[in-house]
Figure (cartoon, one colour):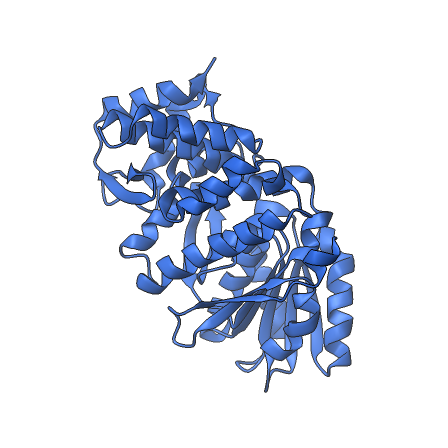
Length: 368
C-alpha cells in the first residue's frame, strides 16, 4: 500500500434513514481502530460471524475484543452464498442461546456480502433485534451489501426472499483488505460501483472511463474515490426511502436478470458478474422501449467490459431465467417490474413490459 493511501484520513459517510443515524467509515486500518468503540456499552457478549476462510482474521479480531473486556463467541459459517440459509441462521441462534446472549449484547459480521447479509438477519431476529456492527471485507460488500440495513437469506426458489430491515450501529470499510482479495472479486465489486454511476453519480462513469485498470487496482487512488462515491449514492437513496417503497428500488438496477442468473447457476457465479449482464439487459429493455439510445447501451457494454465484467449470457438459458423473474422482489402479483433508465443517471420503473419486449432484449444479450 502506497504511503499516500496509508496516511489519507478516513472518510465518514452518514446514513440518515435509521432511527439512529450511523456512519460508514472508509479508510486504512479502521476496523482495528474503531470496532470496540462502535460496540459501546453495555455490550458484554459479541457473536463474531465470519466465513470459514477468514478464521485467522476472526481470531485476531476476537483477541483484540477480548483484551478490551468483551466475551467473544466465534461463529464460523460457510463461504459465499451457502451461508445465507435459514438452517445456518437457526444454528447461529442456538449458539447465541447457549452462550447466554441478551438484548444488550451484539453481533459483528466480518466478511463479504453474504456474511454481512446473514449477520444482519441474525441480529434483526435475535430477541427482536440486537446491536450490529458490520466489517465488510470485499469491495462488493463495502459499496453495497453492508450499507443500508437490508438483511436476508436465500431460499431454493430465489435470492433474498426472506429478510428484514435492521440498521447497523456502523460499517467499517478497511481498504487495506482490498489488497488481499482475488482479482476476480475486485472486478465483481466494480459492477456495483458502476451501477451507482448509471443510476445517479455519472462522475463514477467518467472516472472508470479514464482509468478502467485503476478501478480494479487496490493500490490505485481512484479506488478509494470510487468506494466513497458509491457509498454516498446508496446512503442518499436509502435516506429518502428506508423501507424500499419507491426510489430505493433503483438500487436494484440490473438485479432482476442478475438474481435469475445466480439462481440458475446455483450461486456459483459471482454477484457482480451476474449483475453486469443484468445491467446490459436492462439497458436494452430501455432502448427497445424508447428510453435510451444505442450509444447509451454501448456505453454500458464498453465500461463493463473495460473492467473485465461479462456483458453476454448463453441464449439457451432464457427459458429458465424468464421463469425466475416471477419471484423477483419488485414483482407485484402477476406484474413484472424492471428498473431501467430514462437517461444515464435517471432511473425509472418499467411496469408490465410486453413478453415480446423481454425476449427481444435478451436476444441482444444472448450468445450461442
